[in-house]
Amino acid sequence: MGSGVADERLALRNARLYLVGLAASLLGNSALSLVAGVWVKTLTGSSAQAGLVSACVYAPSLAGPVAGLLADRVDRRRWLIAVNLVSAGTVLILLGVHSAAQVWVIFVAMSLYGVELVLVDPAETALFAVMLPLAVRRRVNGWRLGIQELGRLGAPLLGAGLFTLVGGGAVAALDSATFLVAAATTALLRVASRPEPRSATGLLHELSEGARHIWADVPMRRIVIATTAVMAVSGVGVAAQYSLVTAIGERPAFLGVLTAALGAGSIAGALVSGRMIRRVGDRRLALAGLANFAVGELLQASGWLPAALVGRLVLGFALPWTYLAALNVTQARTPDRLQGRVSSAVTLVLFGPSAPMQALGSLAIAHATYSAIYIGSGIAAVAIAGWLALTEGKQSTPWSCVDDQRVADPRFLAPALVDVAPRSRHPRPLPAPPSAPPAPDRGAGR
Image (cartoon, rainbow, N blue to C red; front, side, top):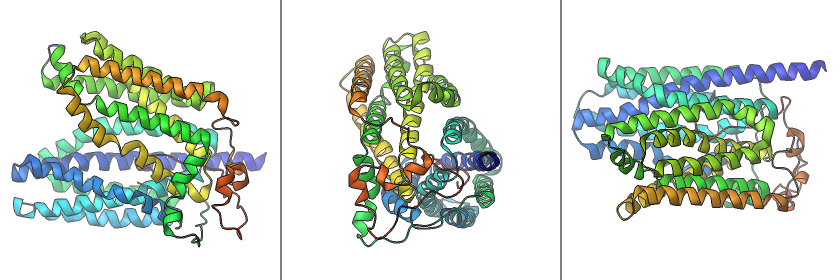
């Protein structure tokens, strides 16, 4: 019993450090991400050049599978410390930007920034995987998402204020400091790390191993497909919100009020998600998120202001609940050696379709009403929920019944996965503190 109490205390200590690092990281990430584009626009007057900042940040995400493989091959804790320390230095090159002639420095800095985000995300997720037991992890995932939503609401305002008062260099210095905080909190984590030796199966085989693991595990495959589908559907409705604002008789700036309602719902949904999972489980949480999405879209389709506000609030619960369900299932059903690659594969399939689906939504709003788009999105969510509910009886194991020791044993996984491991290597148990991970946003490791 004493050992169990000690393990729980260690897990809670690691969780607190992780959340401190997450809060600092979100402060720096959100502030600089906004300010970099504003800075370029201020110096050049060009919206096109300002838009290139986002392209610089997100272009490296195409290398996500490689970053996932790296995360499974290195000492993740030391890797995160090193990347954060290097990033704390590279972001300071922005202190040399004073005129339009130096705007290329911003593009270089933000490209390096994007590389850092790609390198950190799967390693952080995998480290999280071996750091916390299932019960603690579920609570931390909910708090994590809540902090992320709070950070996205507040940090851009802080960044914009600093930029207005003292310039972009101050925001870069702030972000550098948050990299140092992330490195420090990661250094204080107590977690065993045993990098997986290089496999003799070939690079392409290793890069695709995370995706093949998801596909071979039926419960995991179903929840990832459902979550990917609803996130893609949500992208179609992005352009329709501008027509909604016009329909309810408000100016475009009123979109800020609707966004605040959405954010409030997201924060509330994230904070109660841990209790929801304990009471109803991951699958029902996903179904509840899909139901909320359908209700929220239909309320927005009414074009009535009170209904639109309530709809946005309800929608705030939708994607966080569905996403957290997918996150918990993939964490619980993935062995330690694949956590980095599974994390990068999940991130790619969940968020990769966002840009093309938003482009499709922009095309759709030119030929259909916002009400038709919202009604169609609601019907799609009901169809996804129906498919997910009907498949329950076809699976032989509960979605997240896998405990941390069994998930480390390939014999528990789908037969196809046993062949992935080199024949000469015995299945290894997870490190001392029990295990599992998070998703796209930096925690203690940034």
